[in-house]
Amino acid sequence: MSKVLLSTALVVFLSVSLKAQDTVRLVHKEYTTVFSKSLKYPVLVEWWVTKQKVSCANPIPRKDKFQPDPLLAAETNLEMDYKGSGTDRGHMAPAADNQCSENIAMIECFYFSNMAPQYHSLNAGDWKTLETNTRDLAKAQDSIKVWCGSIGATKKIGKVSIPTKCWKVIYIKKTKEWRAYIFNNDTSKPNGLADNKVKVQDVEKLTNFKFKID
Image (cartoon, rainbow, N blue to C red; front, side, top):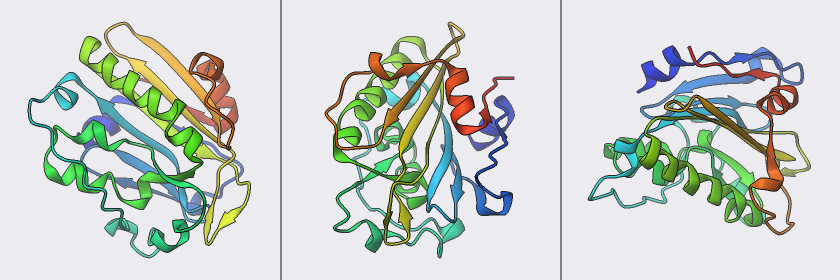
């Protein structure tokens, strides 16, 4: 899947807020992440959600084994930074998207290179709702391309910055439809996906990424 990720989408990283040497692209079985060594969270994660990946009869149990990414072990050794922080270890590529893949995919999605500190109201609220909706879309429409990430810093929890916003862009291959969302990462109550839906161009302006399907 990693070759598909790289060949089917072109994401041009143009951020002026991050120096090029600050970010590291890490390719795993089912997702690719661009991790910021200064912010200590991924600024971009991309993957495909397909009907086959989310519709198996015997899904792999969720592992809940958070750990450093062996491709960037020192920079992602962040377990102690999250403890007692008041934030969740928020998956970018969710565990439930990998329950029909090989066991290695479930293990890799718990690397800290795939995590950003999210307040629980977001992680268990609108962010989770969008994850579920995306899997439902994949079951109905098959291939869904997803990009997501975080931006900004409100404060530090140890070495890790808490992002101000989390965002997601979705492309539905069958219908060629694009959807985009920007969420505030705070303790406010979930207000629904409709109130956070934006244009893809809004995410591009916020992040300085460009999203394209070849």
